[in-house]
Image (cartoon, rainbow, N blue to C red):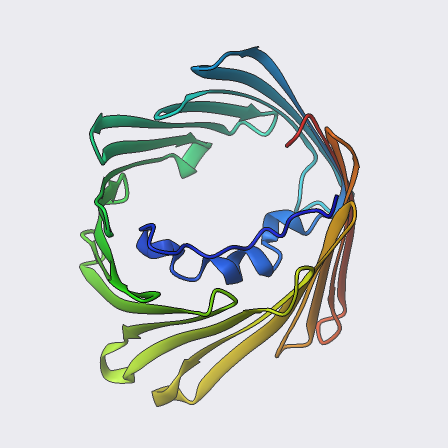
Length: 292
């Protein structure tokens, strides 16, 4: 059976403002997916039933790069159909906890706590999901307060707004986003953020499903007032037991991630990151076991 693509369309189902361009986020390899050295992850279900699931996870990272220290991590996750509790710690002294709790129909609360020496961080987010919209209120320990709203307007069109205020720096941010899903195989998205005297910044993207196995996309970021722009293009090809994702940006950086399903519970990963202009190259191997 062919491995399913990671990208998909939302239809009328509402989603958060941060997800208005999620096809591009899934298409282009994330920083955590481009490995350097060797990484192994093992997940095991400890207790599972129709109402809940409790699992543990072990992770090992081995690298010769001093900027990316080797580490061992242990985590545990408990979740039901509506709630989730996760905790993780590693040998570099980082402790992370995350929870999501339902408060009422369509209303939920998420919390994050991270202890990492001077980089301790706490955040909370209240989410209200309606039939055709999602609204959030959020704050964190760095005195940043924010709110987002995303509305389904009909016929594959979505629009939203995001506001943020940093009390320490006395700085605010406002952004507007729109998304158009065309014929179930194409997505257009745009986000505009005012930049004061510099005008505004624009991020625009195009995503297209070419066939059952191949998808492609492009994204551009620009500040017209400063005449600054950059962009990247990428694609994903799904085959019988895996998929390959690759992208190249305007700086000449090339990235590729190959994921191969060895059996029902193990994935083998190869990745490469090549920046010819800076003469920087990263290669990695990964093994994920237990359905991670």
